[in-house]
Length: 109
Image 1: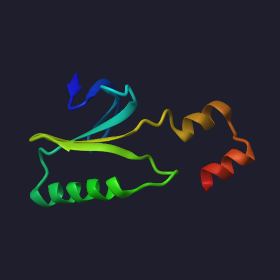
Image 2: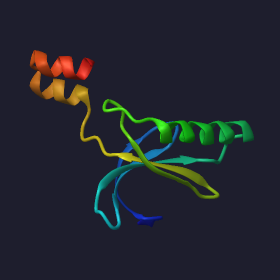
Image 3: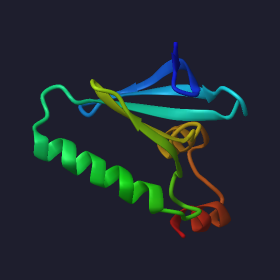
């Protein structure tokens, strides 16, 4: 499936706020996460708050925060495009059982 400037590749998560897909930017081939949030069932205040939250996310720039790359809106949904973070910390701990102290310090920082 193609949405805006992205190819939607596969579903990676599903929650109460929407679905998250791994995607790929058409021209740079950058792997991204695409979170689709349905408007259905949300009132005007909820929609306004979502737009405000997206604007706040646009301004956040920090090495420990997943960066928002893009966002767009259709009549049915919002789509927030972010960097794609491979895996979860609990998966690393589940596999490795522990982390070196230097790595824990970097994560905690």
